Picture 1 (cartoon, rainbow, N blue to C red):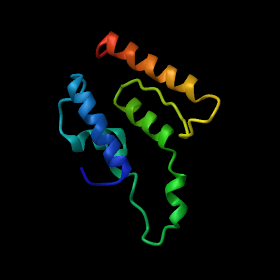
Picture 2 (picture 1 turned 90 degrees about the horizontal axis):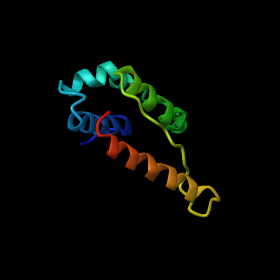
Picture 3 (picture 1 turned 90 degrees about the vertical axis):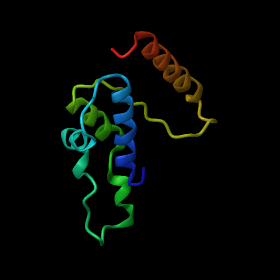
Length: 105
């Protein structure tokens, strides 16, 4: 899939929701209902730093909430020398295992 990070994220989310039986409608409807269809309309003279203004974690959390899907957000800057790297990794792995064990709930 070509496009910006928003459409790639939404495409991935759509695939997961479809596989879990939580979405079985057109992609454009998911884009509209989540609000992601309109996020990247920008002026051609936008400052290059503009992409850093988009709050990926908050926007994607709210996106899923708009269609009634609970999600979690872990913010981490990749640097395996950070003291918290192992802890964050352990929590993420545990959450994934718990989610798999629960099924699509």
